[in-house]
Image 1 (cartoon, rainbow, N blue to C red):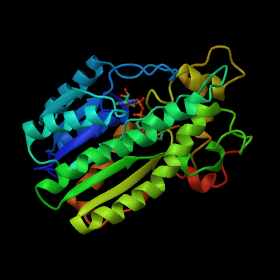
Image 2 (image 1 turned 120 degrees about the vertical axis):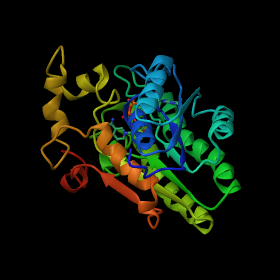
Image 3 (image 1 turned 180 degrees about the vertical axis):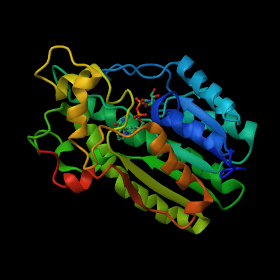
Length: 295
Ligand SMILES: NC(=O)c1ccc[n+]([C@@H]2O[C@H](COP(=O)([O-])OP(=O)(O)OC[C@H]3O[C@@H](n4cnc5c(N)ncnc54)[C@H](O)[C@@H]3O)[C@@H](O)[C@H]2O)c1
């Protein structure tokens, strides 16, 4: 532990696994106390399972192993009340909130009959869930000082044209859920700039990171595999590698969650104290390779 986040209290959504867990462990290892929340159940229209309570407990154990403390709360980012309650519990336990990682997200691609409500289901989590987390955090961050860092997780999907709905962009054949994902991530770009402006006078920073493919359940599931390898009946992780590698300029199939966590830790720390309102790509060159969307 090097203590870059000593004295900080960080609230992380979607902390049961994947990038959220990596944020919890990394920030814990740097001295932050962690309030880790996750839905711990599935969302019906999302075609792959979400984290369980046991997953969230595993995150807690890993944060403790890294030398810090972790409070876990089951909460759905679609419910502002549940988030407010979780934050209340965390602040009671650890003191003043300094950091928010609005990370929870789903990519509900319909494989079969596309359902228009999938668009809304994606937006509810990927956009409104972020806004809910930020909304309930602001009074806490402002109540006891003028310092704070809000880090939102976007996606390169929000920067590339072919994540719009198929009606607008025939290259996107992934249905309304995927279009909702891309739209939500796109809106997060201007939301970040807007909130950063409003919070700057109070010394609170807001930034958004935009990763390319990351080695988590969000890409490693049957739906994504079938989408990218329609030529195969059974698709393995190895079969998926070339399709995933295709997105990045650097010759890698995906980022590791811990690599994204390093960037988020920097944004949570005072080392980034003059950075706000930024949309930061961590994409191994995927945007410069495909500014008009992958061919
Ligand atoms: N994996 C990728 O390729 C990739 C690329 C770019 C951006 N992202 C973004 O990164 C973020 C983290 O995703 P990940 O890659 O770790 O995927 P993941 O599926 O492994 O983790 C997402 C976590 O969010 C939780 N979650 C989902 N809906 C929730 C809700 N309503 N309330 C609370 N928790 C909820 C899940 O249970 C899960 O633990 C998401 O915002 C995602 O859109 C992922």
